[in-house]
Length: 423
Image 1 (cartoon, rainbow, N blue to C red):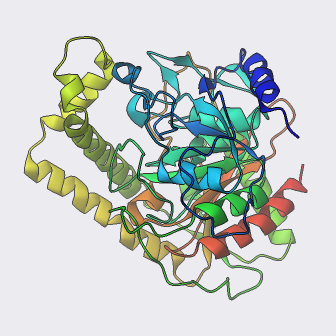
Image 2 (image 1 turned 90 degrees about the vertical axis):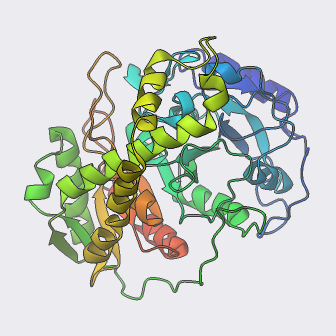
Image 3 (image 1 turned 180 degrees about the horizontal axis):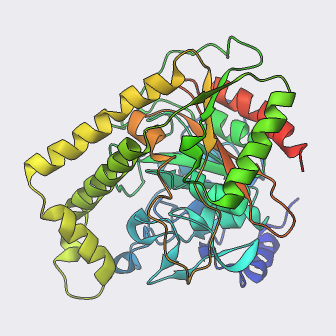
């Protein structure tokens, strides 16, 4: 029998250099709210260890969402997704660090500190789910849950060299998750293998009739063409990639071609995607002005000056401005349709850069390749690309049409093995 008290103590020691965890569960195996039944076999995740992003409620622990003003907010019950993990036998080790209010991609929190990349101290683990990615990359837990609004699971996964999966919109329940944008938020899964992601998704993939964000999808068939046809960036669209990312991406594509997968090069309107990404940011800022209204009304430093400034920008916009932002996001649907025409999946870099030093300027374009999946509700996954010795890893992002989660995970499992063989 596993001594989880010892497991927690070991994680505490290992986390001193990383700074991933916010709080630890006194009883990781407690089934506080286990009325849900997993879709897979009973106890499918027996004794698997999990870290949970701190904007996802874990009963008995502070539900901070990375916000200083919520330090004392203790979750009375588990979020729906956490309850399902417990029902499947999982051990919840604790909650992990994140960007304040999930708005950002660095995880240098003004109240709860930095989460360092386990592969290089002093470098970002990405965000907003930086603590989730770091906990998995440092092998402190087997799996972590995060949230993904414009790439917040996949970008940290790429920076930390792990797998990060964002399912189709509404496939994992959002009850008990502090919202950033109800239109764009997804619960995501981070692990070291696609197989582990698949097993966890089998437990969490359920339709919650009490969740306004829940969606039902027809069972999409598996990819019809074997090997799958992949759309990849054309030469012009690769120009904005950092040198390491471009090298790793092209090396991965060479390996995939040798394995027999047909590639179709396509131009990507990055100007349109960047505009949509900025529109998504505006919507997040505007929504936070409502969800955090009570905290913002206080003058107790519960919300940082930086976040207040971002929120004030969104709050000051007119109804017409917000409508235009939503229209820009709606237009992303045509981008996805065009990209997926006559192919099975998109195969892009996850982010244009690798992890960077905390002292470096924060790139504005981190989410330019990841935001499309959130705007369209499409499933997407980031796979680690092995880099040169001494370099930080890159991410290879796969994306399919909404509802094709099973086919995407099948493809990801195959390609992960192929890309890893190039190490």
